[in-house]
Length: 301
Image 1 (cartoon, helix red, strand yellow):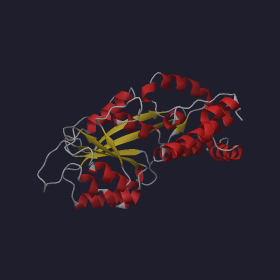
Image 2 (cartoon, rainbow, N blue to C red; image 1 turned 120 degrees about the vertical axis):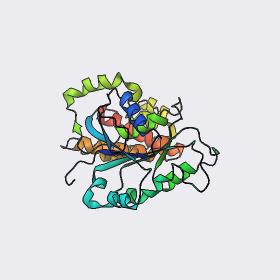
Image 3 (cartoon, one colour; image 1 turned 180 degrees about the vertical axis):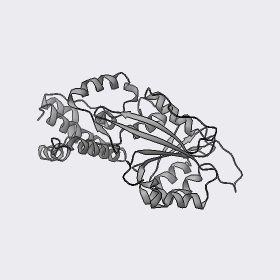
Image 4 (cartoon, rainbow, N blue to C red; image 1 turned 90 degrees about the horizontal axis):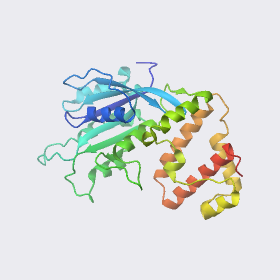
């Protein structure tokens, strides 16, 4: 697999937990057809998906694998560098059922994720998602799923949680957001004269477009009047010197051949960082980036 693009999404989980159903929902949300032969056994199924953002398009592939019969030999094949699996997979979606009540000495569908932990740690995919479906049999205050995920670099997503006014990225929408906001290997940048048409397409599917960085961080708006902006942001607004430095760090190489790629990567990293910050620091970061956008593209000072 040498030389292959790292643009595969490995979807893991036991039979019947909803792996293929989840993939189909993602395709449906992005107005795409399911283009794959659907066998009785979903293990090894490959489903193509085209990601379209405001600035680039990318072709990726869902790889569905079942964990019911995984043994050490299979795990060794995943770890083997000659097989090249780890070099082409850049996202993991592990699907399990929260409502499966089993005997205490029997492993649950969530426990399968732990077998693959050495593989995740060795190859470090950019996206690690653990997706729980069904009604939890655990006390909500004692969420062992989320606790394990936080300790092992995964993001836990409850598929039964619907987006709300205060949190637009939850459940299925958060999965879609995580996949669409990543800059995938092999993406093709959209030329400037194509961006307007692309934005019109995305605006028509606005509910599935999570890449508006400022809206994700904080719904702040910029005015051309600097005094009004100072009043809006208050004490969280950085100094002019700090803003100049932030703008230079974000957009300093925008005009280079791969400048846009770098800017997108930085914005993605900042958004991920902002999600873990306290509210006041998160607002300050959002204000800094928002103001930097205004300085770079809107002539704001």
